[in-house]
Image (cartoon, rainbow, N blue to C red; front, side, top):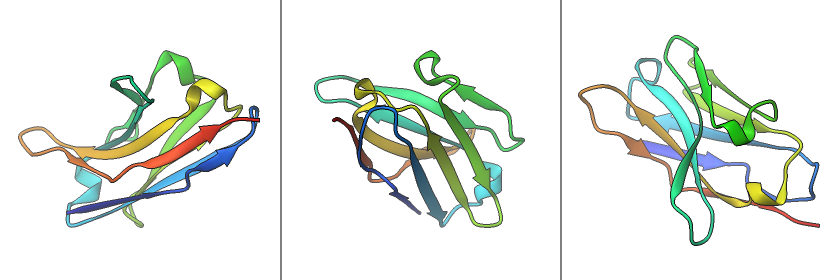
Length: 115
């Protein structure tokens, strides 16, 4: 199983980034996919997830700014991040989960929001 995250980088406040996470070795369409983030010195927190049926869930801090989506044909989950703020700076991890099965994690991609 491999989850390959990409798309992180340095962006100015108010800017946008799109993260991608390509999965292999799992039945992608059967999994809830999502993103957590971890800022320096803080715990890892849920950012957003999308269930296999397409329903989504967001942390209050990103509602209205971030959009999670999935392409089952490409085995890829995305996180579109708009109006980025310095407090969004973190390492972003994608994951794949399903009941009665292990949760798999990607390697993380760093997002830095700074002027």
